[in-house]
Length: 177
Image (cartoon, rainbow, N blue to C red; front, side, top):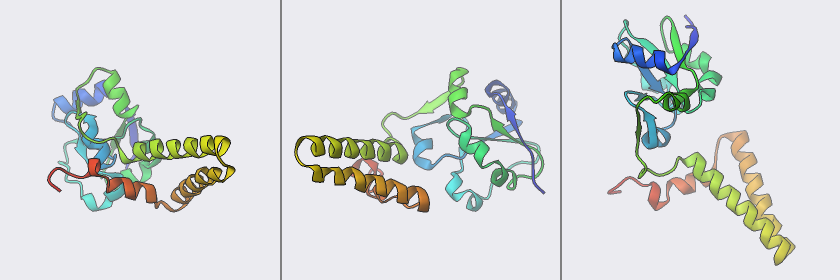
């Protein structure tokens, strides 16, 4: 049976959580959750969602969230299939939760999310290729083309070589690894 996902504003979700009637499930990846999440949320990354086997008390509402709500809404059918009965989406996601002044747990020492690291690295490489191509030699435009091709492959296949390299970087390794 497919459940219906209903949007709930942050203050209603917080009230339900405070009353013990709701469970907030954050579907972002573990690195995103580690850096910043709503207090009381549980991490169930979308990439491993089906394997997570949600254990939810029948009397509790399930509220899904991500950073802005867009990822949650885009995957609502998949999320709804994991829940018996009605489920909810935190309207506006973590951004709306924080904007409402609700408690957020934040670890500024945690590395930036891999996606943001990829965006920063790709942007810097493209700008570097263009600047070097304009000032030193046109062959450097190839660097920008290579990065663009890599991003295209990542978007089309879901495999991002740059993300794999960045995950292996020292700042992204767990302490003691």
